[in-house]
Amino acid sequence: MIVFDLECRLGGHRFEGWFASSEDFAGQQARGLVACPTCGALDVGKALSAPHVGRKGNQLPAQVPAAPTMPAASGPAARPQPMANAAMPPEAAAALKAMAAMQTEMLKASTWVGDAFAEDVRAMHYGEKDVALGHGRASAGEVKDLLEEGIPVAPVLVPIDPPGEVN
Image (cartoon, rainbow, N blue to C red):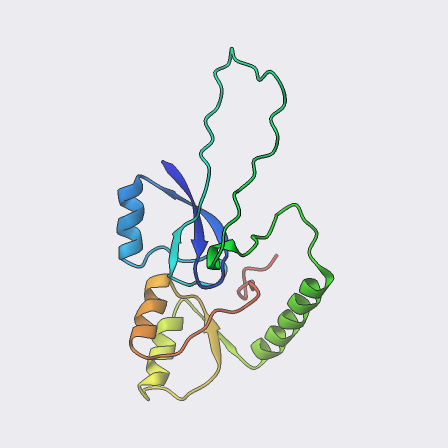
């Protein structure tokens, strides 16, 4: 297995992906199977990363190495990446709280359709079913197919627990 640092080109989200080989990653990406876990975007590529090669067991460093630094960059790739160990700015926390509240209100007027989401949305789009607000699950491939058919869908912004799966 090989681990790649991946980046969503739409939202700049960074995440890891495990693949059998570089060819496996390229094949899955070409088939639209690699999606951003945060926003569901299919425009995902390998992020810059430095490989870690461990020392042999009998070799100890002479001194503690300094933290690695990245050279300055420019353009879209130069935007700062969020640090997992840094505190969230209060403005960002307030924005997320507001988005979660709006989503909660929207979900009250929406019906959970579960794994039948793609079929349900498609039936409404083609007039086979009355139009209504609904939310559920869809694979990256199903979302891609819906978008290619001209059916507008969007991910929920804040992850939700489906009914019946909450502790």
